[in-house]
Image (cartoon, rainbow, N blue to C red; front, side, top):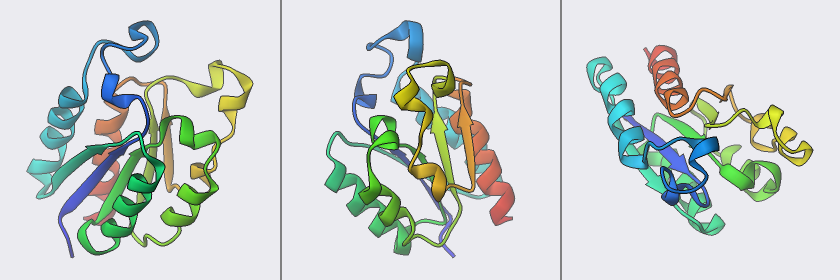
Length: 145
């Protein structure tokens, strides 16, 4: 079994720390990667953090995860609420999937209250800032033993 956890990030998260810090905080994706590695490494796992603004690229990474990853932690960002294609891709992955949102999407606009990804996710974490990623990694490490 692979010992790699994919940490997948959707559109605009390349601007984490710069864009709307009052909602998303000042931490960056590099901070997310360090936080996740700090949890995964002692449990014998590695993390591979990726970000894209292109939905097809995200789908290709999910397909690659079928052979390369033990679990997926995904912040699909705006695709959460719009992408059946992303849901279909996640259904091809057999390992654990944890959906993460930095902000509490349920306290925001109503359109953000629905998630296609949640139909596949084994767990959903929202509103805990980037710490939600570390909690997701902790959970998949626990699930995978």
